[in-house]
Length: 131
Image 1 (cartoon, rainbow, N blue to C red):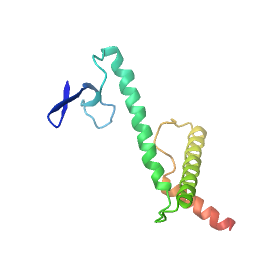
Image 2: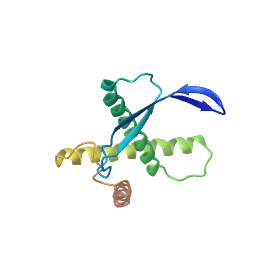
Image 3: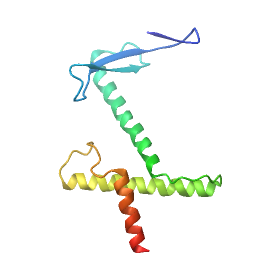
Image 4: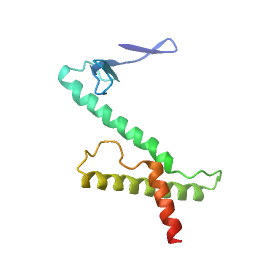
């Protein structure tokens, strides 16, 4: 299907309609858009699985923002230090979640067992006790 931008041909797109995996879908379909031409029926499932995994990654990037401390500093050293701290806390949270799921025999890709706010609060309480 041709896609136009500002009245001119820009590129083509394929729309893939697949049964939704959502519990509340009630027989509805999920729609995926790809720039690949002539997608065969045998290719639809692998393509949509790739998109779903990509969506998981996007959501993980959004959740990392919860760990970023608020700053108005324009000093790159402060901002970089904040980012490194944020990345370390995020990875520690993911590792903790993974270990809990393995111990409780839960699916790895299920929702986090410990929420971000609970985890950060626990780390803050621990650091206050150590101080």
